[in-house]
Length: 548
Image (cartoon, rainbow, N blue to C red):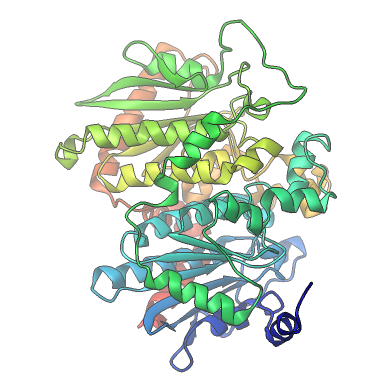
């Protein structure tokens, strides 16, 4: 029975969920000296929405407040769920990444500046697809730049929840705070139903969905740290406490308990494991075998590794490949699933550990050879926390890059969504085959059509006019996201000439990576990005000038 005191306490609470993003950010910071950066009066809007008949918003749905939190310097970044479902596009992603990078700059200079991310987002804004995907990768990189220096606290407090690529960012936070109403997962229920069918997950079954992704479940299973009432004062107190705790010795994306839980899991259901047979050939396997100095190895059947001589370097190749015998039926066609995310993290971390004693210029290049349909869309995957396994892979790749390992992505086939975020998009350099079979995008067409309430035909028509929506690799490269397109004779079964060309290109990419920055800033400085990502440059300039 609820006591009169409990009822009085409930009535006295101020709902955090009912506030908009600007009010949420202001409510968390100390009274007094706070100010908004790159706000609506700067009028830096997405240039991609109006041509699609979508009214842009002058702050692009992300609010950045700088001030003090419990007396400590902090930046609070809030995503407005009411605008485009909290989707991350070019401008909003640039605001988040730049604010995190500026906090890291100050922290390195002695003014430790914590960051708080209010994560109410469906992930990548599909109206800006490929640029949204790129900026989410840059957000993760900037978060990992700040995280060793100052706390990065994530808050998921509303019914929209945190999904898509931004769930990977949530998995990288030093501490994650949720309410019962909040939800956290890689793929939203409607996306899973669209990709895998209602038998896999019924998007209308709200009790089931909250039992899998809700704040209570995520906290009990260790995928979030603290469960807090929907109350401004309670959330502010929890955030102040999280910031006061400082930077932990080990982060969730580096800990071993998730690995043990997944290894102990026994997927069950009607999808029996396929027995026997040779591993299927795929573009990823074909290119790995063609490039490798010798044999191809694999700790798990769906991740193969090999060594590759590139000039004076011995590089390490990592390739996710189909495994029809996997007990996880949603990850049998080469998707990045639970085991694949953890295996990628393990292999990259092993390489970093083995080379830690070497000077930077001798640390091995890591080649992420990419041919994957996407992440694994499945109920078991969401239950066990696929977003966290992908966060582990992102963490490992970014750690390798900042430790001096040239990380090169070579895209030879399909590269979609969270799969690319986990395996490829943290690279210093990205190469891709100039071939119709290379497909790079934020989501499959049918699912994207359902989420955006359009037909596939309408999406294809828009893709012909709006470059970030295009599924064509040359359009993708034109966004400044590709360092070199390679024309080959046979993309599915590489010839000796194709292999020589790829090795030469990889060798040159390693040299560029060693000379270049260890963050992802080169992607904004490329000629293509200077043409197509002018809004990102405006955000970076405005935030930097207003920061001090």
